[in-house]
Image 1: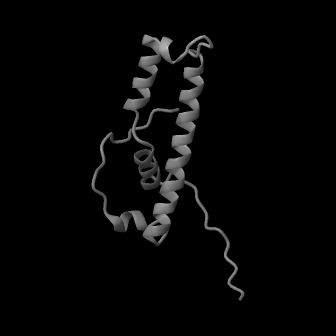
Image 2: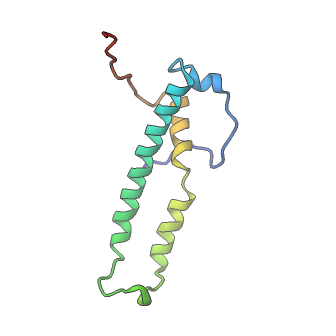
Image 3: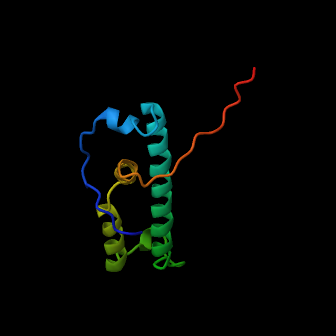
Length: 107
């Protein structure tokens, strides 16, 4: 993943600013949720792939050992900004592309 300048802590935001791009705070929240979920799934996939290199078929629950490289990789991902903060940052900077689903108003 590319390095982004995203705050590590939650900050207070004006709801009106979050609602402005979509015109509705609830739609903005859905966009943010879906993007944060995409980011989280991508990070999980990336982390799992990196940690598979350390998987040992002979390990059992009793024989698990600590591996410094594995711990370093895990700590790196723990220090990364949370997916929801990244999604909000992308949304505020106009980096997200989203579209509304078409509705059928004919009844």
